[in-house]
Image 1 (cartoon, rainbow, N blue to C red):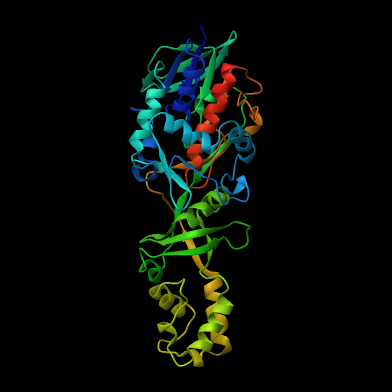
Image 2: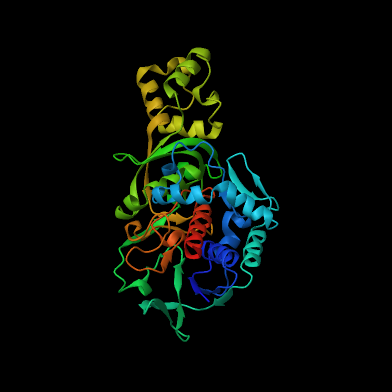
Length: 395
């Protein structure tokens, strides 16, 4: 009788356990969780609604969704895709709906439906909470698992699914694995610009980037009371996670508020020459943002379009296309916490997720150097890699 140990009862660990039980009903499956309850992060993700995957529609490449781990995800998604994930949950009583932004949620809009479906699917596996692993070592063709406050356990195969490894992976010390130092990903930007923060709650489509680098992202931009958030900023924080960590989360930020700004400004000036500039604005920009941006361009209050002149024109276009702020720190995005880093992908077989040098040791989920932008892609990585590890163990 084969003994399987899964370390970590998050999305990848519980999904892997469910798939191992489905494929190997006679196996003894133990899931060890350091916390008080399983799937704690899944229960709160997506504001408690659980953005469990994405349609992937509109992506030009997987690298847009997975800044790190694209090669693994190409293989994992072939074995267990986003469509497979939706079907898997639907069969287990969790039908899904697709939002306009291609994010997929349970039809009930309740993350606990996802949690309960996973726990039901794990039926037959033994869940051990408050079991913190302190060491892991190969022993005569099996694996010995040490705990801080419990007797050791043994298993024929071990799947490590401990998540983002923000505090490192000390129990893997001594195994000779390459570990990419973890840094935060998916965070918002602290910007101390009073005029900008006075626009709190404003949402606009924009493009953001880090001047002097190739890091760029676009999407909805949300002005908050501490700075900037929204999908555009979260994508940028993911793409530039390691760069921003190296800068101490202090860097210039460029915002392109308007595409084709040159043409838009010329059209407004020609169409409304006798109107004040602050009273007529492009349809894509809210009025209060437009007023703020004209002030940023140094245009005096009451100036009419006919009075703009070449210098004023170029200053306004420059602000609309390359408005610059200073990032002065990061803030956590809601309850979510994602890290870039973890077990280097050079350690593993990209198809089976088994360690090349240590047979019987597998990895799945964010413990690997795989992470994604916001929008359900991180949970899809958990399902796909958990599936790949379970399938490999069962072969």
